[in-house]
Amino acid sequence: MRKHPKFKRIISLALAAAISLSAMMLSGCSDGGTDSAESKKTVEEMRDITSFELLDEITVGWNLGNTLDAHDATKPNPTPERQETCWGNPKTTEEMILAVKDKGFNTIRVPVTWYPQLGAAPDYKINEAWLDRVQEVVDYVVGNDMYCIINLHHENWHFPSYDNLDAAKGQLIAVWTQIADRFSGYDEHLLFEGMNEPRMVGTSKEWTGGDAESRDVINQLNAAFVETIRKSGDNNPKRHLLIPTYAASSTMQTINDFIVPEDDRIIISVHAYTPYNFALNAKGTFEFDPAKDGAEIDALMQLIKDYYHGRNYPAIIGEFGARNKYNTDDRCEWASYYVSAATKNNIRCIWWDNGAFTSGEAFGLLKRSTLTWEYPEIVEAMMKARGVQ
Image (cartoon, rainbow, N blue to C red; front, side):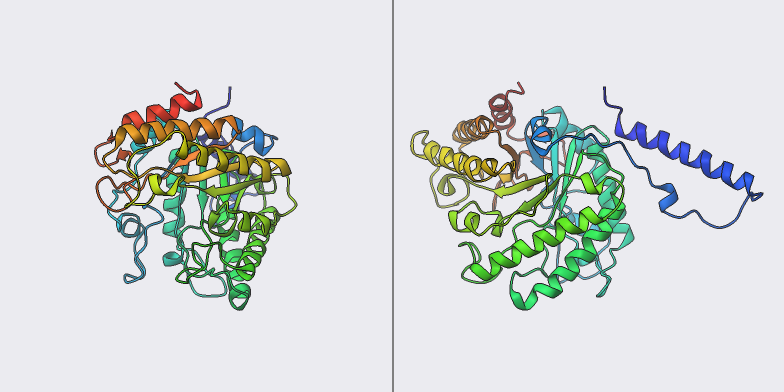
């Protein structure tokens, strides 16, 4: 049985402290300076498993959405708590994570927006307090024997154009170097996702697949991300990494131009609110049609399997969901069909929970302020479809 991560960290830290004390005694020093961060770093044993084998252990995932990824450009230099709560969700607690685990989820994607907490170029030093807070939330997840994914989410600096490529690549490398160093000792339960939905924000091509230039730039940024992690220390050369296509889209145009770096621990990151008119479009349909809508879901899963699994790359649908249109029964039927279709094609799904229930893109399932599930039947439908219940 795998040792609890917190237990392993406690033992490792105690051992490191004992070794440090012995070294000081041998050198004749009872005091003297501060320990380096490196001397306190805990490196956990990482299992030598493929990304497909890792996905075999994932049930259904849940996004801690609109939380550490929240941001407000009009209020610079926010404290960690101010940034985390500026979109209306409460500060994350370990009790929230345990509530998610108790429902059968064993993977939590923790979207993170970093730009409000970065220093000036060229170092782009991350505010230490923010990095500490991200690590605290990661520890809530992996410390309870769950998988955790952290990423770069709502970043405003990696617009995919040739004019911006050098600047974006330099900043991406600087930021990921720091993140990789902080988390280098974590085992396979922590995954890194290079970018969220890289796209031509604010243009007419933003959600239509971009253009050849933008797709090429995203390939280059993905390659820089993978190279940066592999060059870092401890467990990072073996860490499982997620990379997206343009906007994390699965259209043929984005797939055909997508270049995956040569690496044996890459997972493709896809976002799919499918079918759009039922799952995402506020003015779309309220009823789930198993024939018509189911065929669209089946086609998506077959496409992912053919184009990614066929090239020996597993895939995770890092965001999916059906927004609340006061149609719970149809959402349950949709969720069951969606997760079942994904499972049949060996694809894992992570629900986008943004904490919203009645307005906007209302994908909320867990009411975090009270630790109550507003739509437990949707969760149960997903778990049953995945074979968890």
